[in-house]
Amino acid sequence: MALAQATKSHEPTYTINDAMDVLLSRLDEAIDDMESDRVQIVEEAWAEIDAI
Image (cartoon, rainbow, N blue to C red; front, top):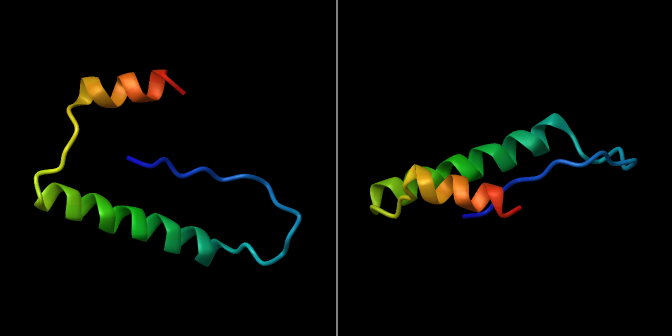
């Protein structure tokens, strides 16, 4: 499972629309995963977060 990461940029090309595109594509992937029964239990998710 990938994590999105936002960083400050000095480039004026990164817009709120770009962020929304990333967010909606991640949401689409999550919905596809749920529909295909590719889900992660909460304990696995927390373990992955703690490893970062």
